Length: 324
Image (cartoon, rainbow, N blue to C red; front, side, top):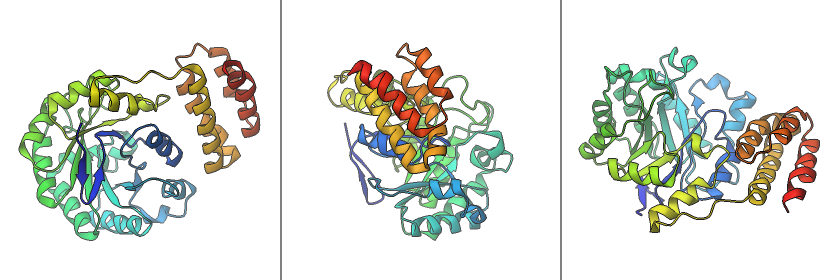
């Protein structure tokens, strides 16, 4: 199991956390890094600098206490605005800038951002050039195979990215049209890896150690990114890491460990967002953590609690106490 470098930054092993809007906030990134992820990228930030003072942007730009390298993802379609946003984020502590050309969501795509940019290779090249020239830190690109099944142009995009000075390429194995339906395809990622010399990282449908090994072997990529499979299961990073290193999968966490880690994560969410927002945001994490523990009545009751203090107290009395 090899390490890799992104610019001057050594990434110790190839099992990374993928950026996910509404999920990979600072508490979640810290959790996944503590349980084995070698690298994590922030939720995407708009290049619209008028949003800098909004609460959402302030939370997304908060990297206090995170292990490096600090990687920040930016989104937009204007090369000059993206270059400016990159400089602002570097001034705020970003050590790597990632450009989002992978998000398939309608509200992003209708602004010609995210994966919608793949329909315009000339604009892709212009954006990459402007952002690379604007900052002294490495710039990476997160993308997809293309717009749809008839327009899979990832090999062209990859070559343009490398020529522009992009330091690493992260590829989700679906098209924009697929969103998160169907299955990821890895053949084109393998083709890209064979054609360019910068690191290539595969993403999409990697949800077990065995699948991780399959994708690494199929694509010959430098690393893999785990997204949705880490929701409620941050242990997946150390499981995959162990399997890639020696063929052994570390033991799965028992109910006591799951509930303890969940409790500490919820405390971190409350501290980060404040009690009101923290309590609300914690609900989706609670559902993810408890989904396989046959605790539906407990989960339903937890969803109705509107106080951060009561949320933690309920978990402590009904889950931690019961499994200790």
